[in-house]
Every structure is written in structure tokens, then in C-alpha cells.
Length: 312
Image 1 (tube, rainbow, N blue to C red):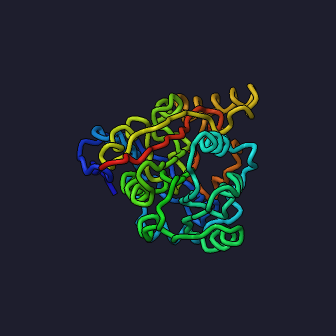
Image 2 (tube, rainbow, N blue to C red; image 1 turned 180 degrees about the vertical axis):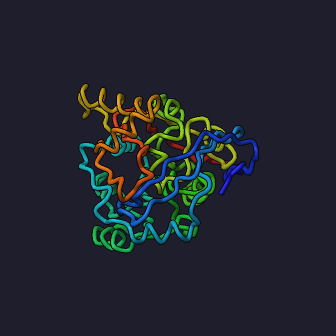
Image 3 (cartoon, helix red, strand yellow; image 1 turned 120 degrees about the vertical axis):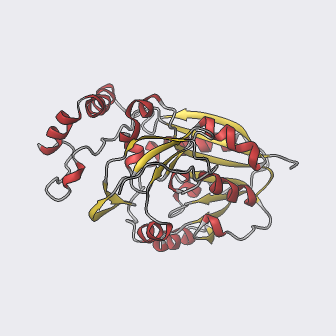
């Protein structure tokens, strides 16, 4: 199917530009698929600065794949979770924080890490992960951020760690969270940053947008544009690397080299893929010769904290 244009899912603008095709993937939510998932194309809105995948699967198809996801995914050791460390440091500097809502809480590991000084609430779509979270003491409000009951009392801080990129409309996602928090409360989000140098260099072949469950991609410009429309203000923003402090110089050099090879010599990269680079079975998945390698040492993520205005 030939796609000539798209519409921004956040602001509805047709002023979008196509960055390029996203390579197909063979995994979703930690599960290896029987066939390749088409990557669609990466687009950028010239009005609100959102980047997004289009075309993409329907929400029904996406939700079905999440429910069938691998429950052993997203189990990185806490020492490797730079985002968790940053969140905990930011939280300890705040006053009068009692009720935390973790959207996409999975099995409750983040709330457990943040400590028992808070009341834990969560949103999670995966049934087994939901059960694990409840066993840890997390009160589950629902399975979908778009259909949450109004919490009473309202939330002090809503957390969305590596979650907003899974939504089809980040603005709608942020709107739902804003409705859950009290005036003066916070929304803390960690996600990729499309303004990162590594992302701008790689475009639609960047590893972060290649992940099949990632649909939308934000940046500081988007945050500043959307916040006042929702009665929010950007309180804090920090860019970081997921492998901050843990990657050796050799690891950083290797990740940069293989990504630059893909960017500037894709035919040679594909040849190396066929010879076994990256461990992808190209006999089974023949269209993954240009599947991007990870670039975990790149400073391509951000923590952005929104504060809800006290008055509308």
C-alpha cells in the first residue's frame, strides 16, 4: 500500500513531513512473532513537533499483543535503571507526596523500588503482571489509561516510565493523567527524545522507533507546546542515557560504529547481518537485514516532569 501523507494524531494537523520507512520487526512486548511486523513510516508534525508511526496496527490488535506479551520482559537490574534512579532522586526532593500512580506498572517493581512511604496505585494491561503487582500491594485502578475511574482523593504524582511512546496519541495520554492528579500535583514521564543527536542522525532507522510497540515519540519542544493546553507546566527536564555510568568506552565506540555503518553504508551493514551480525535469523525473517542495532549508550532519553496548575 502506498502512503502519501498522514495526519498528526495529537493536533490533527496535515502539516507533517515523512522522515522515512521504519524497518520491520519480529518481536512485540518481549515475544518473538511468527512473522514480521510491518514498521510503517516515521512522520514529524511541523506544528506540535510530535513524531509518530503511520500506518500502524489498530488499538484492538495492539492490546491483544500486549496481553500475550512475555512477563519476563523489562526485568533489567535496578542498577541499570538510570530512569528509576533519577525518579527516586527527584521524588525525595518533593514535599507532601503520598499517592503514586504508576501507569504501565507491570509487576510493581518500580513502586517497590520507590519505597513503602507512598500509597501505590497502578494501571496494567497484562493479566499475569497485574496479579503480581497486586500481590505486592499495588491497588490496580484499571487496565487502560483511557478508561480510568476518577481517583478519590486524587493522585499526587502520576508516573509513566517508558510508556507514553506506546500510546497512539501522547496528548490524549497526558490528558488522562492530568485528570487523575490534584492541582499542584505532578506527572513524571521518561521516554525517548527525538531531538537527541543520535536520533536526528539515524532518522527512521533509529533503534527506539524500530521497536514494534512504540507508536509515538516526543521531545522537549512537544512538551512545551502541549503543556499549557492541558493546564500543565514543564517543571523539570533532564536528558540521560539508559546505560549512563555503566557503558565502557569500548561499548560506546562499538554501538556508535555499527549505527553509523547502518546510516552511511546500509549495503555493507546488510551484508554483515547476513553473515550473522546481531543474531537475526534472516532465513526466517528475510526483511530484517536493516533492523537497527541498539544504541543504549546514547544520551537519547529524557525525564520530563509536568506540574498541574493550581488554577485553570
